Length: 332
Image (cartoon, rainbow, N blue to C red; front, side, top):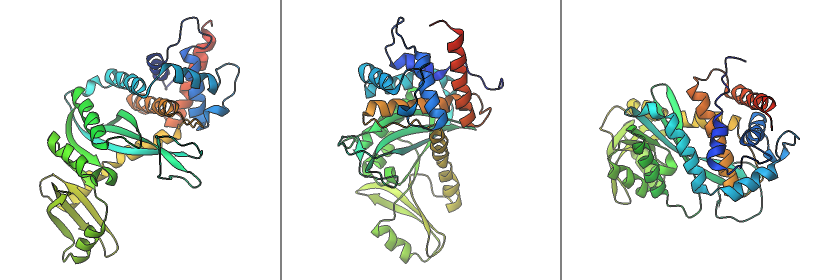
């Protein structure tokens, strides 16, 4: 396993940026890292990780609750990404923005649990916003934030784009899903920011009528979403199926739009890989949920930066063994 680097450990770096761990503390950052990596490598609930050589989940939860806020966790992750992504400054990137959902099976009411039920038996979900950039063959998560029931989605989008600009990355285009594209406020933010965008649009009643009345397989026309101007692009593949986009890109052949939009699936692939090392928890504290979500993103970015020397799952396991070996070599 010498082909997989284990130092420096980015999870330990993230822990140092977010938790206040005193020099004389019983449990060090590497100990909490071992706990998180053990759960990630097994795709398990962190509450089930019991080992005398590392802290238990209650200790980690306590540290998170005492030392962090949602904002400080986000800033810790952003600080880490700033350092990692310096080489992307000045480069053109596809920016891909999406939500991912963590199922919730409890009964407690909280402003962070949404009504969408992503899994059978779930009562709702925690919702995380994530932004990824694609530069050539390199893909990284740069920004993440939990979304509450009262979050201003357009403002969240604006802040995420502002961060990409702060990094000096040039936005070639923004690719969005139905949830973002259906909002007139989101489209207005993108228009005002002067960026090109392409988004899948939901097939509402008015869109279904347009598709039904189409005489040709392709339609590209001016369109408004609650008064906000955009372009509507429809590719009718059959009587049963059609692609529907909104965009401010110049008119082009339909397959060109489709090829561009398929690049958005890069982030969904990222989420699928991320979920291979998802650290599950029973906690309803959004800080705990967000902390563990960010740990998995840190691991994903580290794996990408090393050129994906092995499968992501194996990479996480090797990272865990590297932390354990480091612990055994250092006095407590």
